Length: 299
Image 1: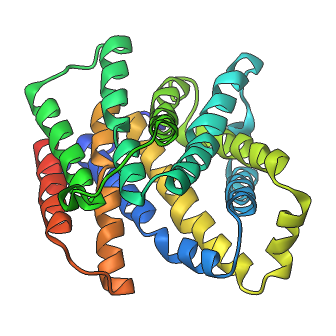
Image 2: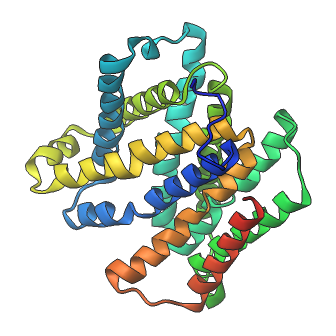
């Protein structure tokens, strides 16, 4: 089976398989709080983590290509700018802007603004690829955003926003959306693993250029940093991005993919309750119901 052939799994269609892959990817992204909190507790800055995570992910894929299919490295020179944009914007840019957004705004505001990304994807997918803008999709989009807002703390009435926070939050959403938008075009050229390899490679190289030398040294001098970063690299980067990128190739609907990925903040909230003893609030419960409702609508 080639990358873009329709996969089947018993009675399930390629759409069922793609939806399951996106939900699995969102779940893994939602669980990245475990290694990221551990690294924060060790005093690790964000940039060296991104360097090891993204370049390490690219190295794993490169090893896979060397062992199985070396032609997977081949891309045309004219394709590199888009692949570079995909990595520098959709991976590195999103992480940097979201991290900064969390610093200048509350975590709730940063999360709500980030999850305007599905709206951006739906809009551009409709304009560029003429994806159908159905009532079902609009309802699912509204439910997903409402669910993310509830999880982020909309019900507590304490949200505040500065101009800088607004710009950073919308910037994180735009760059987050760009991975799906650029990826859909790149997937018309190459398979999902090739596209992901170059996206991670450019993201890692960008982080390496931006990262101060003394921060890079912390990766080897901080006890426990490398195992935690490797865990984040494999389970919060390589595996979910592989699943999401492959699903994007199979689904042929960027907006639906972005909406389904909104399961991430709900998983993160539930993880906080189970792993860190955070309270189960009414907002989390309502958010879970809303996001699950969006998933059901898009099944």
